[in-house]
Amino acid sequence: MKEAIKKLTKAQIFWPLIIFLGILALNGVISGGEFFRLQIVDGHLYGRIIDIFRNGSKLMLLALGMTMVLATGGTDISVGSVMAISGAVACTIIEGSLFSFANGNVAFAITAAIIAGMLCGSWNGFLVSKIQMQPIVATMILLVAGRGIAQLICEGRIVTINSPSFYFLNGGYIFGFPFPVYIVVFFTALVLWGVRKTAFGLYVESVGCNAEASRFSGINSARIKFFIYVLCGTLAAVAGLIESAGIKGADANNAGFMIELDAILAVAIGGSSLSGGRFSLLSSLVGALIIQSITTSILSLGVAPEVNLVVKAVVVIAICLAQSPVFQQSFADLKFKFKKQEVAA
Image (tube, rainbow, N blue to C red; front, side, top):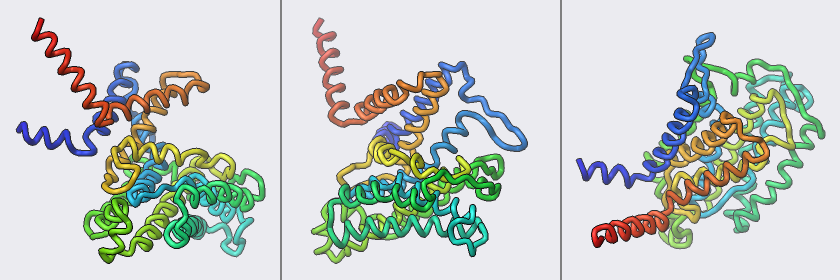
């Protein structure tokens, strides 16, 4: 039993999950249990817990893609701009100002938006894997240009649409649960299958640990990296569709603005190395939920908007310190020192 507990505590997902549950428990105590109250209205579940999962769905999708990119030793700071492009493509098609022959077909709009995300990922992948640019520089190009492309697609305006079927991507429910949760489950299962049931996951870890050695071992490192960036762009496009469906339109200036930093942070909180190598997709998802739960907690407690980011930063620093092996060892040494002094006294 003791060995099983020790093995459990060493699992990468253990501490992120404990932190997430701790944040929820703290909110429950502060709110007098109101935080956990769920309501069923018209067969749909409503409550702050449900809001965390629905509103966190975009960040969870980005965390999936970012985990894979970081596992190869790269990074992608353009995902927010890809979200803006995706939303712009989908909404202008539904509105009829882009590809008017589609007659506002929602299925065509969604497909075109996802293809746009794949093309963005392909561009990043090409620069990183073929041109061999530094990932942060390569993706910075699309970070800047991507939002400009989205503004060009929207013709410099905020596009609003009227399409209940498109709204379903964010506001729909199936069996009482928000539809974005099902989207996250689907892509998580798909990516998990790819990295755990095939050799692909090992290839990614190998490339992240040592790309040159992997190449000499017969692994096509460039191809692996290219595919990973395409995957990240695709997931960012899906996240952009969810956001556009939520605001019922496309806002090229604000859609996904600065969310790439939260995506990287979610991976870090999940315990995956930012320098490449071993990774945990589920831990990154929990990291995304931690960030969203902090945001929801701050809003529910009525913290002034101007100090939201400061409070969030302080909490995140505390979480990262708590997970740091060096900090944990220092704390353990300090605890041992005090215990030794008590025995001596």
